[in-house]
Length: 88
Image (cartoon, rainbow, N blue to C red; front, side, top):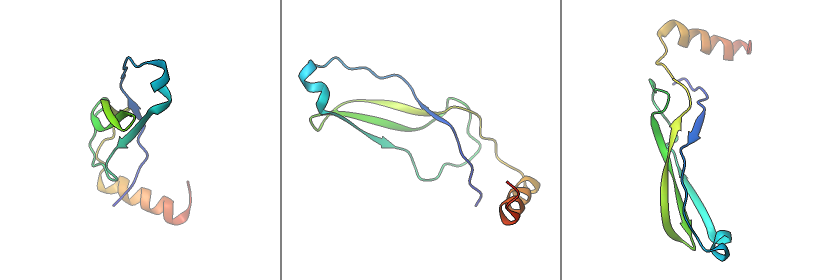
């Protein structure tokens, strides 16, 4: 298994709440520990669920901010060697 960093972004979410409830807003990020390439920019990879006082008030998608192509065998060997030899 080879790991790589992937940029993520959350698409917009808004909710109209009384001002006294704003301090009671919380969220839960739901993204799998492992994502499998290839991924396309904008592809949904998870979600953020928003709560107010413990009650769900909405959900927004979390998306890949860039393409994450599947890597080939030679690229995988290069990445392993780079890590092993600490070249990067």
